[in-house]
Length: 267
Image (tube, rainbow, N blue to C red; front, side):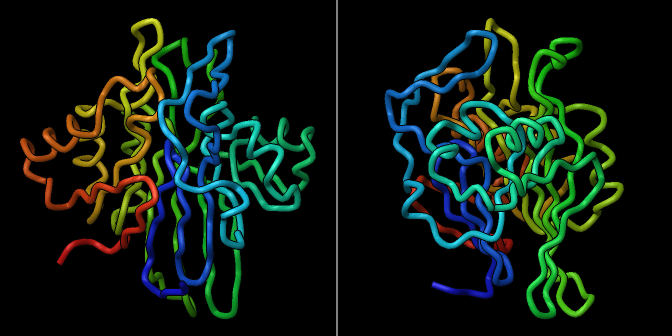
């Protein structure tokens, strides 16, 4: 159903459908079923624990895909087979090269702070690549490049809505540049889960996630990417408890797989 209100439908992992100002985006498409394995690179696999709320064939008509990085739990073999290869995929330059080899000719790799725009009538949806870092220190060089995305809706030259999608980043010093450049963030989709492999933290856990909320200061935070694989070690309830302890739990809106919620902040 069409709506002017920005909203998100949660499919699972970091996969969502975003409806913003008449534009429809898909994020980080992971459509593997429960029990199927996602390849995480370097011989590592993880078996999915949950079912996606939708399949590729059930998706609405899309304007673009936003892909934080090319990992098997963010762009899987089901997405590779099922998505329209002419669909724009806004992602890292590293991911663009591989997607192009797979036949996704409209993949658009963005350097940090550069933008890709979609236009419809007097509306512009601007997707800007933001800094992110998947692993600590030198280990990050063994992992795919990752980006966050700022999604700005402008209408007739006036900004209507701003959404930050963190991607699979850790809390790193370079994230401080984001609120400096974008001080007014309406909502944030935050990738959590506290992913650990061989004991090493690779995505934000509850405490790091809460630190980033306090850094970025969005009016609304919607947590995703928190329970779909056994490598996710920090459950959603830990983040909610941390938000309550720090006093911003009223600005957190949790979402279940298959649920659609508004991205407008609570009254």
